[in-house]
Image 1 (cartoon, rainbow, N blue to C red):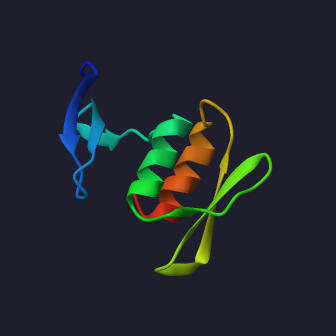
Image 2: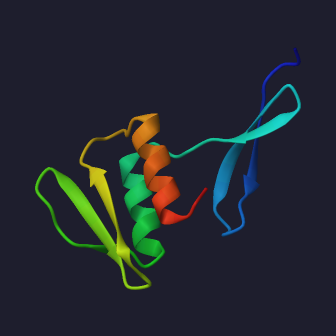
Length: 90
């Protein structure tokens, strides 16, 4: 098995992402830092609709989608992946 290489590249929206190359396959890492996830959501037009222990984000173009972001410093990989899918990042 070849060694793991980590390169940085721009995704289709112009965001810098880490690309991990393992045995010739590119696997994009998902951002798990809550501060960065929330900043990207706001930059893409998502509006913070409040919340108690979680932040709720709504978007005018997608009225049926509600993204819930827990108020932790770091998100678990599963939660980060779910947010990325709902936001259309992956």
